[in-house]
Length: 135
Image 1: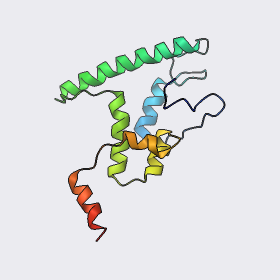
Image 2: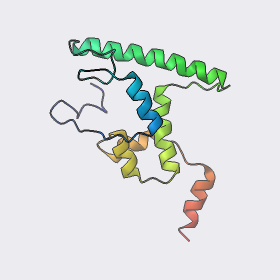
Image 3: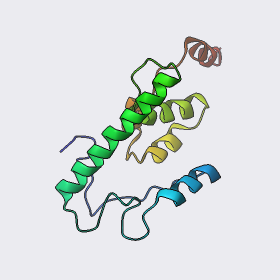
């Protein structure tokens, strides 16, 4: 079991509330499953946990391929993937001065230390700005 998920099990799961913009809601409405416990059709309620994990992994691989193809068209040469998007989400919130507690909750983390591992380093100017406040 991964260390960041070892404290999670079916008994102590927490709901995560996601607020969507209109365009995001439209996309989900277009692609969401017509019925069943899963958001998308590629997962079915009769799949066992191993098959669900395998299917999700395959979908992530395909999604990452498309993200990289889009990145190349936009002349983004860094390796980009869904993993980077999660870290970028946290870093953008931090740089917009969102409280770390809010970022922690948004990522579904149970403690702030986990969130801090996701956060990118501040630009030097931001650090200097914060240090000036100590004068």
